[in-house]
Amino acid sequence: MTSQVKSGSRAAKPGNSVLGRLSAISFMTPASIFIGVFLFIPAVWTLYLGFTNYKLTGITAAHPKIVGFANFQKALHDPQFISSFKLTLLYVLFSAILGQAILGFLLAWVLSTVKPRIRSMVELIVICAWIVPGSIVTFLWVAFLNYDNGTLNRLTGQHIFWLLHDPFLSIVVFNTWRGTAFSMLLFSAAITSIPKSHLEVARVAGATKMQQLRQIVLPSARSFIFTNLLLITLWTFNDFGPFLLTGGGPGGKTELLPIFVYNKALKYLDFSYGSAIAAIMLLMNLVLALIVIRAGRKNK
Amino acid sequence: MAILKRQKTKMIQEKTAVEKGFTGLFLALCVAFFALPLVWLFIAPWDGQPNYSIKWPSWTLTNFAEISKNPYAYKSLVNSAIFSAGSGIAVILVGAPASYVLSRVKFKGRDSFLYTLLLFSSIVTGSAAMVPLYLLALRLNILDTYQGVILILTGGLIPTAIFILKDFTDSLPRSYEESAQIFGASSFRILKDIVAPIIRPGLAVIFVWSFVQAWGNFLVPFILIRDINKQPGAVMMYSFYSDGGQPVIRQVAAFSLLYAIPVMGMYFYVNKKYGFRFYGGIKG
Image 1 (tube, each protein chain N blue to C red):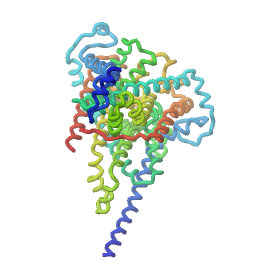
Image 2 (image 1 turned 90 degrees about the vertical axis):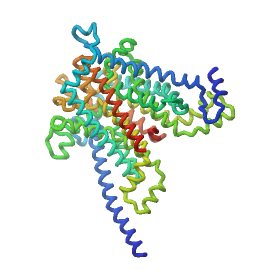
Image 3 (image 1 turned 30 degrees about the vertical axis):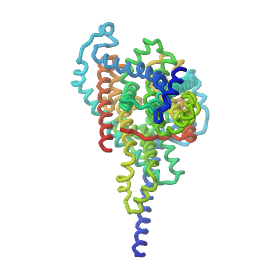
Image 4 (image 1 turned 90 degrees about the horizontal axis):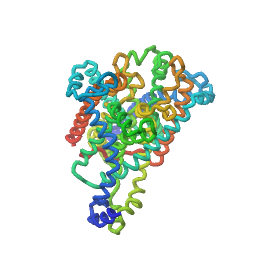
């Protein structure tokens, strides 16, 4: 109560928030506790486990010891980790940036020029793919790619075990299908926010579609583009979705880092090695985010 | 001069005809790409003998009766609802006040703080921190409980919720709050009578977003819940297997539809009422 009275008099200056310092702090407290307990502690714990030899089985289960950088050194010489690492970067490049972001942008751009009825119908279908729960989506794609009578083989008249024959391509297409809606919605918002008159002036002046895109749409959508790239890069880098489809197989060809961690830590119960990889992933996330944020500031 | 003008308009018209063709082709391909894998979800549940193909169904309800042979199936949807509603409410209660402060009070390092949060959340909610989260739940004595799953899901959802909600609040003018202040309204009244009503669409969007995320989450309940009576639909999807280890497609198909409908309905309701919009972006 006192904080409110105080803040009332404190916030009399225009331009200041209506909140006083105390109520601002009390508003932040629950979120800070949640973040501290359920995000910060697990992250630090992960880092700590990465420096130990903690396993669920064997002698070290009872008395884990600090082993320094041993797990990290092991990772750098582990061909499985290296290939999983490369695979994850390719997965982000192809399915998030080239897949979701570009297809999402094209859809938003094209849909801004068609009749509202067609627009909302197409949007509905794209969004469906995004909001159907992951467990269902797995079965939908198992059915779609099925060897005997899956829709894809029937339509193309082929007989291919897609998940065995082209596992990486399959999960890239799968993730593009799954996540494009987010980019489409974000870019739709960006295109809507451009004043109509700007595009009209350009059209009258004889600018081609390409020129309109490059000179008007892309610069005004700048902040949306970087928000989008930041979020989808992080989400895709940590995406566990393909696990339900392929389990990381065949032969590790779809073993992305999150799946690699899962297999090491929760399947083979090598907690310390799994945690070290997780710590490396956290670092990689940081690097990726910094790249996107710096690019966003530079291109201003 | 007149001829030139006519030629020019003609050129523009020709271009739009070609463009129309490309637009139509592009949209048709997109619709095929996004719709084809979804068709099975809406067709297979009604077929007496469904397999992985898409075929005209025989329109029967027997698959839905078949599900109840699994005593935990319907219960799991109730569990999903508990996890999702619990997480949605918690995200709003905890995230909304924080995002309001972050939007209205400027302090040093605010943006870096937000980015750091996003980073942590994206990794901790992945498989990476599952071991510590499991150990944490064990220590806090919330393993195998509803509240355990809700708390951990909420922790993972809060950063993105704050990020989106702050963006939303930034787009609202401060002038209402400021004029109320000039008239001497207390902070509490301003929040209750002015701020709450105008950010309600943002809250509804975030609630549904959190609900949908929690509804679909597989990993957290998979790791934290042992008691099959408390498993949500996401995990239950993988329990419709025959003794031979093959999925029983009749049950999977019918259960998928029941499990998908609540979140789809909710999403489209809120979308129609408030619209899932995004505001701004990175301002750095």
